[in-house]
Length: 419
Image 1 (cartoon, rainbow, N blue to C red):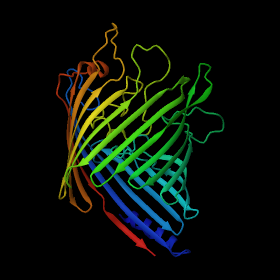
Image 2 (image 1 turned 180 degrees about the horizontal axis):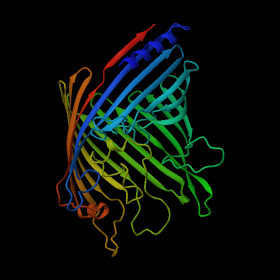
Image 3 (image 1 turned 45 degrees about the vertical axis):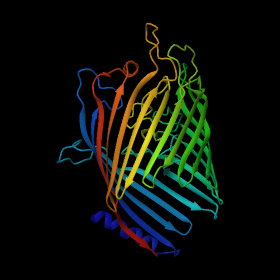
Image 4 (image 1 turned 90 degrees about the vertical axis):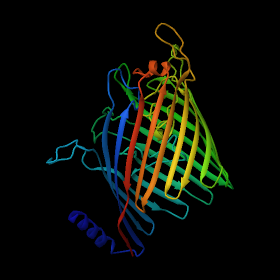
C-alpha cells in the first residue's frame, strides 16, 4: 500500500505542471472464481473424476486524461489459489501488463492510439476481450479512429516479434505475426450496421525451412435492430486466403431474435452455423470457420465444448438455442438450452457415417448486485452428449457431464483526482 501511495503522489506531482484539464482515476478489481469441472470442455474420460479449483484475477487500472491526451495502464496478476506455498518469495505468474496505451485526439473526429490494448467489436464474435478468461485478451497494436456523428471507422494494425533480433528469427509465440483490420459502424434510427475486414498473417517454415507468412482474411457484417419490445441481430462472415500453405474457404452465419414479454422477462431464439469439413473429405482446403479472436465462451454453450481452444479444423457446428432472461430488483436469471448438430459428415475409421446430433446443453446463470461495487454471479451447466460427440471428443457420454461455478467481482474506485 505504501508503494501504491508513492506512485500516486509521483503521478500527481508530475501532472501538476503544464496544461490545466487533468483527470486521474485508479480502480481495483478483485475477482476470485470457484469452478467444479466434471466434463468441462470435453466429456469426462472413462475412469476419471471431476475436479475443483479457485482462480483469481487482481487488476489495478490507471486512467489519465490531459486535454487531448489519454493514457491507460492496467496491471494484473492471475493465479490459482495454492499454486505457490504460503511462504513463497515469488509469485508463479508475476505481474503482467494487460493494457498500456496512449491516445491522442488529433481533432474532434480523429484520434490515434498506440500500445497494448483491447480490440473489441460488436458482439465480440470475431474480435473480443474474452473477459471470462481471468487473463483476458489484449493486443500490441496501433489504432486510428475516425468518429463523425452516427459513424465510426477504426483502422488498426500490428507487427510482432518474440525479441529484439539482429537477423531473421522464427516467431515462436503462438500468435499472429502481423495483423491489419478495418471496422466501420453506422446507426440509422433503430438499425445499427457494422462491417469488418480482418487480415491475419501467421508465420511458418516450409519444407526448405524458409520462413513464410500466409495471410487469412475474415470479413463480414453485423446488424442489430432494437425497439422497446424487439432485440434482434444478424451476422454473416466469410474466410478466405491461406494458412500454412493451404487454401481457406469457410463461412459463418448467426441470428438472434429477442422479445420482451414484460419489462422484466425476455424470450429469445437463436441459431448459429459455423462451416466445417466432412471427415472423409480428402482435399487440403480448410473449410472450417475459425472465430479468430472472438469471446467464444459467450457462444455455443458455457461448458466450452466448441471453439474455446478446441474443435478447430473439424466438422463445424450448428447451434439452435432458446434464451429466457428474467430480471427482478438486484437479481438476474438466465436459462439457455442448446441443441448441437454437426453440419458435415462424421465418419468412423471403418467408414461408418454417424448421426449429426452432437448433444444438448442446458445453461443456467444468475447474478446478484450485492453492493454498488460488489457483484455475485454463478451458474450450472449440464451436457447430454451423444455417441457422435463421444466419437469426436472421446470420453464417456453416459457419465454425468456437468459444470458449476461461483464468482464474486469487487470493483472499487480507490482514487480519483481532477484539476
